[in-house]
Image 1 (cartoon, rainbow, N blue to C red):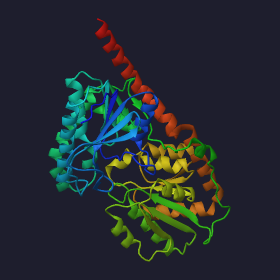
Image 2 (image 1 turned 180 degrees about the vertical axis):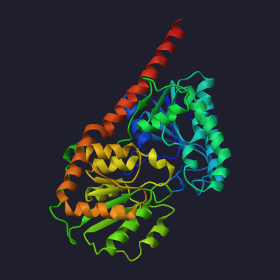
Image 3 (image 1 turned 60 degrees about the vertical axis):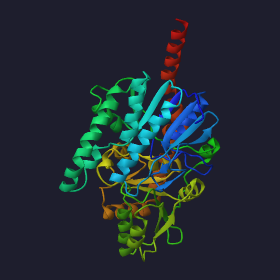
Image 4 (image 1 turned 180 degrees about the horizontal axis):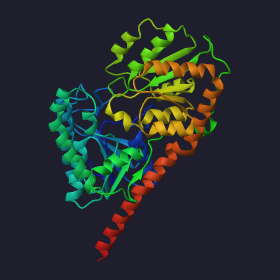
Length: 430
């Protein structure tokens, strides 16, 4: 293996690195690029298996290195992969990925700082263990409320079967949270959740950095404006989008049922685009069969997705299960970046943001009739919809542009790196 000196190691599994021009830049990619712009040498460790598409990006039997930027490398760790998100094969895969990191880390010079995203528990624990053994500051970025969310949906038998795994994961989580020099998260509620496992109060070193959204060219952001018709019609309908993975997290069924409800009411002024792919695609397409007010695009690359988003007026955020009360994910920021109003059924802090900012409407979870009612109210008040869209775009430009978010995130991490370098210099001089 080629030996690289890195200032910082990032560990995040389940998030594809943006290795091609049309790839979407997600949180770890944007952080790695921001750190590289600060002059850091970055190593990002992730799985060679892509969680979304359920396919391997590279060979599954050895670590492959890819260049993300001149001073940022991605280490794609071997693992067998899995077909189902909640399965023994996934747990086995995560265990082997963590072991692969430990082997890889032993061959590399020690970094100044290690940041691990949680989940996955196994990879985060491997990072914590390595950091503790080598006296390196460790930071945890809380992304998802595993394993608590496992117990907030499903029947009693399923919960009982999961409880040994939940107990084990809580042990790993608590250890990582307690030993972290800083807890980081993408929302206030998620940070509070992570801190509850640390045994301490939230401190000035614990930070929230929103996920945000990043346009490849800054001039794209300044050129954006919301344009809404004065009146909707069958030929010029209200364009809505459901965009995401067709799986257990995003509830596409409730949107399809809302489309059925609108069709039953004789409403022809709404067109819904279901953009994405996943294990439920065939099921959802079958559910929508015969509906003229809904279409499926399949998976879209970055350019195709931005084109559809620019032509839309409104986006759906409909989340299933216990994670709903913590959810503050990528889709909201993508919608806001393109000046879309939002219909939201989560009970997370996004609900409060929508109410306080006037950027959309909140509805009860999994309520298709409420979604249909909300859409019809917007049809009757295009001026109100336009005001929501304009407010959404203003809020994005002010707070959610990823260039600003990840510059602050990188600066937070740089203080630890500079401190470690100073200590190392003092030790050499001594």
